[in-house]
Length: 376
Image (spheres, rainbow, N blue to C red):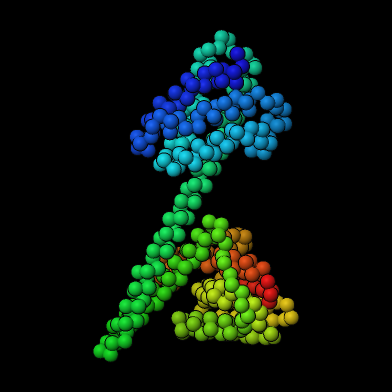
């Protein structure tokens, strides 16, 4: 008897064994009824049996082993993906979910071997096809499970970031209220200033986190275009940065017509992150310069600093989220970044149909160049 036929004839027997094994995967399984424990086991087995009956060449088999083969049984992938999602919902961990497939594979092969007489070459070929089908189902379930994990994490981060804003705002308002008292000594005022600065930095980090989660959840970064002068935004950003970093030589150069239509709040994000990044990684006793130049159709920003160049191995992932450079050690006091600043810069620039690139060398320093069309 062909293995695919054996699976179809004994599918309930296999699903019973699946259920008994799934019941041992505590604590999540303790709250599941019989239907939930059995889940998509029957559908996965029947789809695997159909997959095994489809003719397959040696080339197709080799491609499938590498995950490159054509999708021959969509129902197998659908059932496996649904299973992965639901196992995440009911609280199975990834090891428990994948162990179900291991147990299913062992159960089918064991019972089939017991039913065979003397194994023949064709029997081994059928076992290979069965293993391929189970591997495909396992890959789909794992991918679906991982996607649910990431989405749950993003939603958690969104809730956390949203809920943190209120207490941070309360701290900031309280420090401003206390700072108005006339009888404070110098040390108390210094302490309040540090609290205020730290609160603002945490507020920036929370805002970056919310922007990151918004992008991850597919919502994109909303923008509201309005006429503005990018030079004015640059002046304000440089002035704010100078207050935070009074010992840094910040320079601004403006040339040409820098007016256009952009989202002012988003442009402030771009400038704040670029300036903050340049200050953080710039060499001491060297100026940090921002150059803005406009022509008939575009405005170009160039953010430059001297210092240790960005390594060639880091450049390809520089704008990826949650990526830190080698000098951004979590224990370094001046590092207040979540590794999201440059990611948000790229997202904002892209939403405005602009481009950003970076060049870095020992001799010339590091320059981030942003080119923005004046009109969307």
